Length: 340
Image (cartoon, rainbow, N blue to C red):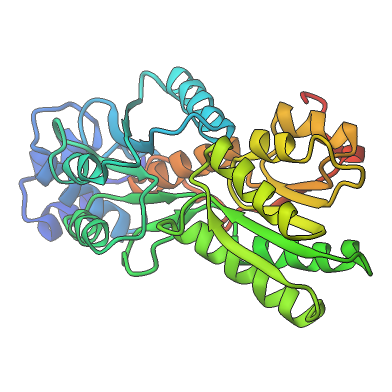
């Protein structure tokens, strides 16, 4: 570090940070013995003077990140878990990921985890519902200086947090455009099933889908959005009820009720156009059978990598931030990933 900042530069950093020259030397050479508060001041001033490379982390020890995910057994969350585990192993000397699950039927546990961390944390990655209490808790965390990533679901009123995920409104619009083209002159309604409208991601997908379908297929009746909470039996019942009312031309599921949909369609002679989300082994099998038409994939592994890269960049530990928003992938049978 002595080669990066000459002594007159260290003196300037000390003046700007309001600390002694020896404190600056200890911080820039990562010798310890300096509080995190002073350490951050020194590094902030070094950054202000144009130093970007070779600076130590703004805290001692590994970076501690709280990862708060909904307690869901869906393939999407399984992929997130596996990706976080790989990153934890890869960066274990520099990063500690404290993973916690909160039950979707008990959002108070999420609020407790947000408001009462077990110990200090240097960053947070969270999947959260769109509620006033959650917004307030997250705004407080961000205002107190903790870099925060909103994973999968964007909350626009949480100022200063970064959203890592696809454009969910665009995903819904894409599904609407493809559905309107594929159903053609097929008779019948189009069913729209969602996980929960408590999540802005599902609100945005549903809104985008309805907007485009209303514009491009105005004669098609849209049933829903029907909340099924990623429950296979609730999803099966929603599809069966729609089938009992008349022909079903298409089905767009923004969540993870595919087993229920498949069960409801088991005895159909003509399958509806079925659009879903996430490139999973189950969906790969359904695509190969010709039961499912396509899936929109948000690349959970890429989300995890981008989330961690954002936090590392926020603390000056890497130079380049992730490129956001992430790109959505359209998967059909002909371009299924080799791993599936």
